[in-house]
Length: 540
Image (cartoon, rainbow, N blue to C red; front, side, top):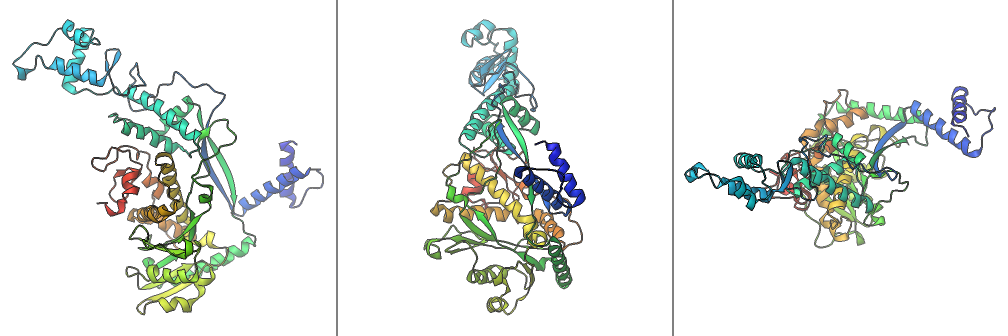
């Protein structure tokens, strides 16, 4: 059926606000019309979000560009020829020479004629040529003199050619293995190769370089647009009314508190193997399978419950619930983390008993304000004020406000602006570990107690940094509780994974490549030192 006919019917429905009678549509076309009309109505009512993401794919019907020069769009000068097998080559004349051989030739040639050696004359071209056949002309001798004076450096163009070839091998393997890859991962892979091979070159895998590399290697990014309906199965006007009334009530109450005393607490389920739903793949491939360690781990969850205040800060401790056999942690406990309160239950879901522990150990923590206004969702146990009062210290004053059912997506700050970034960072760490640390398996039971607390603690620690106060305030502003728009800011993800983060790990003596930037010490750090060595305890 013609797309124009479908659109005409949609237009008639929108104009007449009823189903058209003149057109005869089959069942499939009628359903499509209903979907399109619903999407447009939701857009009109402000209930539609548009999400865009990229997936990388191989182009199966296009030949690779064998004339591709990876030094184009990089920061280096184009110098030919290249040897993509050996990255550490030095250019002498029009030939590439292994840097070790070049250094030997420089040392030999420089051992003569040095002023410190009483003015010995340098060996002749014929003498040098017999020992080093790649020195063939007087110009080559002058090149040795220059290298002696300025130092022997690898040819940058050749090193980038090598990196490009190695990058294609690694990306192809990742695609074959079903790993999730985005453009930022291509940049990380490129810089990993530079670091691992100790290529001392001035190179950054810029966006234009990545785009050119993908085109040359039949890798394409396909932008996917998805319309996500947030419509509830209740009257939208009623939700809006309740939301506005709740915000008005809270803003009135906030006049009796400082912003650092006004908190929002909420629980969110995080799956153990959390990955993005889009990835790079080969162009033209219809099905893109992704390999995970265990399909069940994509469903197994743990619960996190942070608290944020209207001044842009996080509470000192976050509550975490793990599902454990018998509902108890083993005698050996879990990896000790100072900023988490880790509990266990037979499921990861919160219970009334766990709620009371949350209040005791997080809300009424010694570093929390003694006078609090706390915004909570409509979970029934939150309303048991008598139970909460039973664990409240006499010196603490607490006022709770319940956000009406169906309104949390609009006026609960943690939902509006925090959990999305939190999960995005966890996904990036999981994807990196999947590609580069296959033995780092978060969901193995022993690792749930050893590794999961590390990762959660580190991410919570980073997003609690003072530089992110404006980001947290934005969630309160968009929820309606703050009247002044926060100052411009960078998101936690952009600060932790900037474009130039991939390089040499800045921990002394480390040879690994970095993957994340610590917001506290501002060092670019490798996975091993940040995650496995628990950087929280060593950051200075």
